[in-house]
Amino acid sequence: MTAGVALFLIDAFALAIFWPVTARLAQDGGLSQLQIVMFALVQLGMLYALGLYRRECVAELDKAYRRIPMVTALSLAASSFVTAALGWTNSIGFCVAAGLCFAGGAVVARAIFAQLRRHSLFRSRLLVIGAGERAWDLLQILRGQGRSLHYDLTFVHEESFGAVDPRLAADPNSHIILASNNLLKLAERVRAEEIVVAPDDRRGMTLDSLITCRANGYPVTQYMSFLEKEISRIDIKRLDMAWMLYSDGFQISPIGRALKRLFDILVSLMILIPFSPILLAAMVAVWLGDRGAVFYRQERVTLGGRSFKILKLRTMRTDAEKGGAVWAAAGDNRVTAVGRFLRRTRIDELPQLFNVLAGDMSLVGPRPERPEFIEKLSQQLPLYHERHAVKAGLTGWAQVNYPYGASLDDARSKLSYDLYYVKNFNILFDLRIVLQTLRVVMWAGADAR
Image (tube, rainbow, N blue to C red; front, side, top):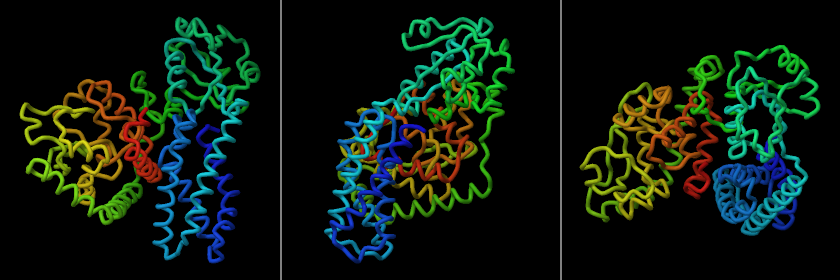
């Protein structure tokens, strides 16, 4: 069990204990059990949406504690909106009691989690086949991005796999075994939860011992598949084309596409209708800034490489691209004062909902890029065109996990998330991304990996 999942379960347990206290404090006999459950579910959803189960908030509980007041306020607003939409009434006393109990439950849950963490309950034990450069990359990636907070790794290496990586050999926390006559006994001795196959050269590797381990209940996972699961992206640096070809994924059924389209329309309308006054105010602010055009339309690429005109609020000077197309970057001096605010809050992207309703874009998908940039990137990055297997999105897996960037390395990192999304698409994944977009708006860039 990962640390994030464990903390979610502790939160759910804490809420189950605190909510009866909420009802008693509120002294509201008209509360139904369904109403109380609805409040609790919405509040758990807000904890997830605002990033309190992400690695950085799980590993650094101080950051989570600082965010609990804001999460509490937003969860109460969301809960009240949902219950009001269902025709229920909430007394002021109930809302105050709910806020106090929710904040108290969240703090207590994290205090319990901190105690459990001190006893090393959230430590993954892995047996890694190989101790070369790939194994070193695995170690570094897991330390910075893995789903578990701590890893106990034992490396098993043979001469046929190539040389031992000197950085791995010099690492004081790395346990390397140069040969093993009985892999099953070794797995039992180190209490391995999973065996990861990660040699630099697999040509000399025998599979008998690995099959024996698998037959005895030890999961055996190939390097790329393990990393995909642990870091929720495709490792472009060590991309194995054969693995991409034969692994599961890249299949979207007609029903899946229909559900995605229905989801796009419903959620777009749910956002546009209540936010239309904000959009109108933003349009006026853009016009008052320099009396220039309010919107700008620009050619972008979507599903199947088809071009369309994207619609956004203008955030740059009217002469921003007089010298030709240039990547936007953080701190771009072409951005106007109003534009900086609109970008930080993502209000500038609200008009793209009309592109979504028109069918040019989806609510969730890879960021729509300009044709001239795609031409260059596709020559330098493998599988770049595969991100166009789905419609471009207003938000996406790369957008909620990686900050603005304007370099080839940034494009490579974003592609690793886009490929993961295309490979693993389902409608629940879209819902998760939409929820996490709220975190990006609230704490822009703070949680980007």
